[in-house]
Image 1 (cartoon, rainbow, N blue to C red):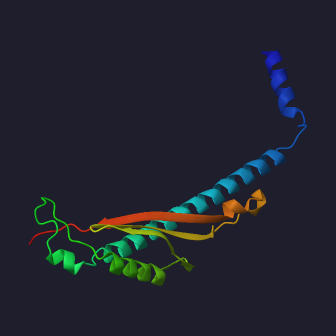
Image 2 (cartoon, helix red, strand yellow):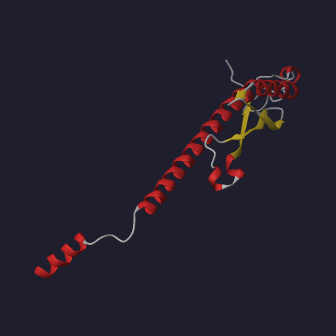
Image 3 (tube, rainbow, N blue to C red):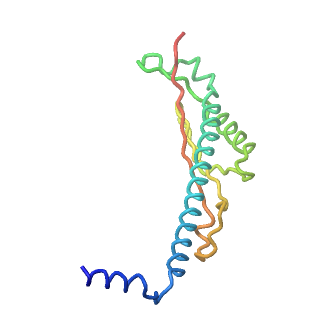
Length: 161
């Protein structure tokens, strides 16, 4: 027992040869980097969600453009799943106007692609911007600028009264 107490007393009373300052600073940098990355990921997710909501509203509004000639000609009257025909030209104009008037984080939303068949419309929109926390210490400009894309679509299902 006396030997053990001498060893413990020697460890406790001995002077340390190094500093924990470097280790503490390293943990601080790691924690701050993870916090910045978390903020950027959360911001990108929020913008993606808002972009999808705006695009879904615009695509649903444009899917309400009815092709009157095809509707009254009753193109699919013998089908079991009836659909209302969409006027693709009007739907395209309406979608582009709605997206052009929408702003997201003071950035313009771009329409990358718009497709329309007689019964379905779908589009891809995107927005490009900088992330809220600039990670300049990583010296990667690609991480600070981000392009977010969202693809949405709608169809026109006939619902009888």
